[in-house]
Image 1 (cartoon, rainbow, N blue to C red):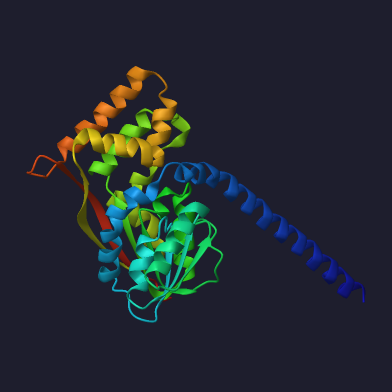
Image 2 (image 1 turned 45 degrees about the horizontal axis):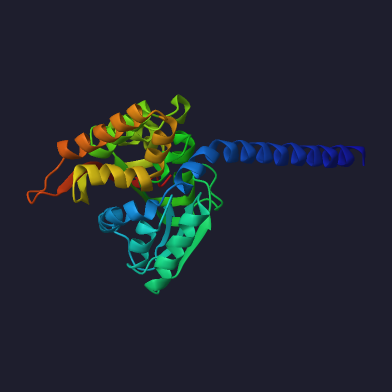
Length: 295
C-alpha cells in the first residue's frame, strides 16, 4: 500500500515536472519566434513571393511528390510550395507563424480548388506525432527559425523513416544572400538578418541534417527576380519585403536610407541578366532532397 502510494505520488510529481517543462519550452519558443512573426507580418510578402513559386514546383518534381503522400510544408508563407504539392494530388498540411500569410495562402488554394490544411505553427515545435508525413518540404521558410538544430530535429522527427526532407535555401554568395548581408549592416545587430544564409553552406547543411538522413542530394539552381529598373526593384523591396522595411526603419537618417537604396539597386545591376533595358536578377539557391534514416 505504502509503495503504491509512493509510486502514485512520484508519477503525479513527474507529470507536473514534465508538464512544466513542456510549458517552459513552449513559452521560450514562442518568445524566440516573436521577432520573426513581426518581420514577416510587415509589408506585403506575397507580392514578392509570387516570383518564387517556380522554386516550389521544381522542388516537388525533384522529390518527387506523389499522389496520396502525406506532405508537410514548413514556413509556407503565401502557400507556394504547399500549392505545388497539392497540385500533385498529395495530402498537404502547411504551417507558418503569420496568420495574415496563411489567410492569403488559403484564398489561393481555394481559387484552385485545392484542399490544404493550413495551420499556424512553429518549425521548432511542430505539433505533429513522430513519422506523421512521407515528405517534409520547406522553400526559404525553415531557414529563418532561430534555432537551426532544433528545426532540423523537428523536421526529421515528423518525417517517417525512409521519407524525404526537401528544402530550397539561399546561398551566401547569391543575389539574395548578398541582400541579406547588406540588410544586416543596416539593421539592429541582434536581428541577425543574415543568419539564414548558413543553411546555404553545404558543410553547415550536412552538419544539421546529417544525423537524421542516410542520403543527401544537393543541386545548385537559380531563380529570377524582375523589375523595370534596378531602382524600381529596390523601391519595391523597401515597401513590400519585411527585412528590407525593418532595415530602412532602423536606418533613420536620409543619408543612410539613400545609401541602402543605392546599394540594393547596385546589387540588382550586378546580377542582371536582362538584355531589353529592364532587370532580371538571378539568385542562386541550393535544392536539397534527403532521405531520412530507416533505423
